[in-house]
Image 1 (cartoon, rainbow, N blue to C red):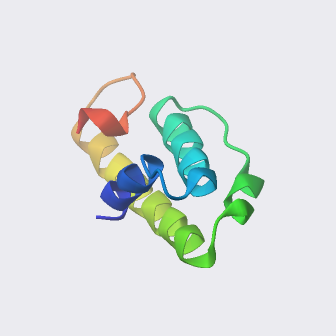
Image 2 (image 1 turned 30 degrees about the horizontal axis):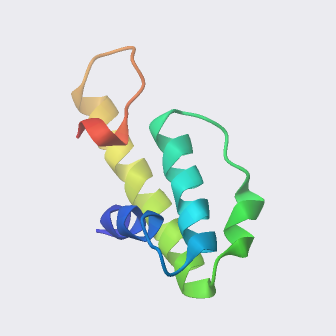
Image 3 (image 1 turned 90 degrees about the vertical axis):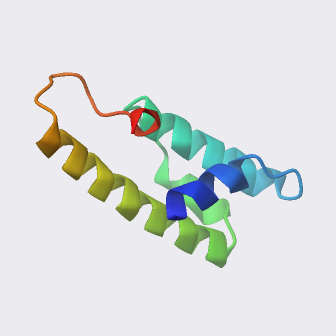
Length: 80
């Protein structure tokens, strides 16, 4: 739910700053890459809250996926 909203906001044409931050966050999550948490401070409070909830959701899904799959390869959010 929160991840879906994050994907939608990443494509937003009305909030370029928020969309850019969300795209960077999604890129980092999908590629197990670093993300500068200070970028989240550029977001409005509702978008900041969305980002935190999306991170919780991503972590929960990742945990479940890793427990269900016996693989060495890192989990990717786009594979689920």
